[in-house]
Amino acid sequence: MKRPIFTVLLILFASTAYAAGPELVWVGGSMRFTDESRPGYIADTMISFGQIDSIYLFTEPALTVKDSKAGANLVIGGRSPVLSGQAVAGYSVFFDYTADNNHKRVGAGAELLHPYFSGHLNIYLPISDDSHGEEALPGADLTLGIPVPNASFITFWPGLYYYNGNDRSDMQGFSLALEIKPMEVFSMSFGGRNDAIQSGRDESELYGKIEITIPMRRLGKDIFKMSRGQYPLDMNSQMDNRVVRERFITYEKKRQ
Image (cartoon, rainbow, N blue to C red; front, side, top):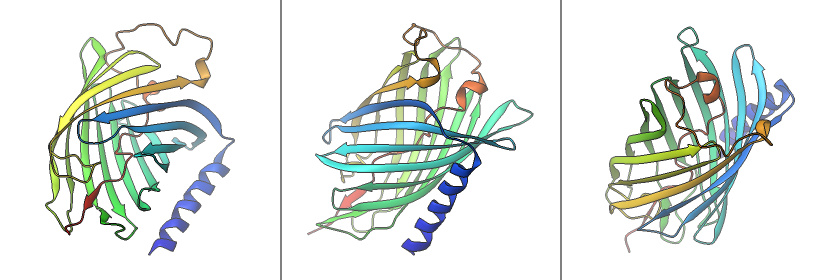
């Protein structure tokens, strides 16, 4: 099972790399903190492979650190205009790994970016066995991004999620976050949800995130300029957005 999955990921990555010369779009990172676990850190980047027909191809490799354990993410995706150019549809496949008990998973996502909202659906499938009393869980989530009219630097992020607990209760519920992005390179988010899916417990949590994104195409320009954002959103500017999904692997602590 594992070998075919890795083969498919390798073929997809090779085909995108062949499509065009790679271009570094942005580099950045984030820190995520909650009241239920230690902070998690991410260093990530986006690399564009140009277009095949109307499909914009890209990859998002990342390094993660959580509980003093290193990890890695790899996203390969594509985006294409739909609805006569009024919106953008996207898809992605991804692989996640953490040295914390060697959890691994693959997944796939779909997204719709619209001038007035965005929708993001992801499926997560673990491919590692339980280790030292922990087991990665399969699951799915659906998240909406709703910018505030005439103040689109503020976005509400309601969401639903479900992870199938194999030994304990399922992790499921509702999430809600508020993102504030006063300038292109900086954003911060605050929110809460029913279950602390990144700490292995089905307890409610409050969380926050600080995120940095440095666009390589605009270095030396006014990337630190304060802005209220543009509303409706410009679809061309959405092509280089991060893929919205859970970066850290959801797991449960097995019963003794």
